[in-house]
Image (cartoon, rainbow, N blue to C red; front, side):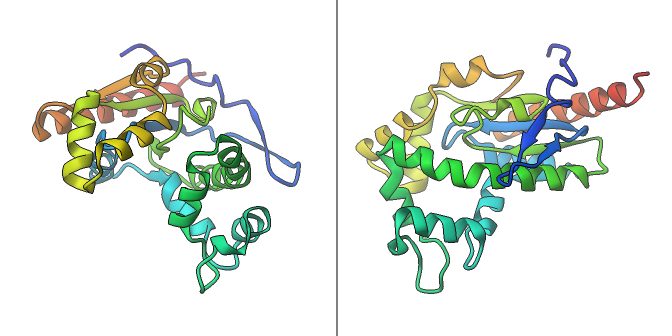
Length: 229
């Protein structure tokens, strides 16, 4: 594991939707990502077991798309009322199907949601008292958000293993799996952005050992940073 370039993003200004600016968190932030069925959730759960704050983009996105939220109102204006449930919340499955194969529509949706998600993640990170926190962002590389974290931690496994897990876990067929993987960054592209890598292709015990090693490493880094003059 190489030494981090700490502060490479800490002094960056980020724009809110209203044009105002906020500073990125000074807390050591780890961007956890990986392809579908790579084991991101399992890794995140292990970090949480040791008390690490997990700031999950998917959880935040879910909260932002409840009935009455600004994001839902904007999405309905852009994509139509048909994208809403009867209770006014977002019909995620329908919207996902609608934008999945249309890059332009996906970009529109990202432009609505991502600034709101980043702002909420920043808000939660500023309240962290633990030495570091984990930002769980499945599409961290695809959406070019690596600049918003101090280190990128990729959970990696062979594509063949992703296929096996998606068939057994989700019941997807080969065509569905191919479409999903085509919409994500390639394995090589994701690894090219990684500062750190967890290999999830052996045993659960080996996975835990790797997560624990990184947990200690990140605590050490955070301590070194906090004591710098």
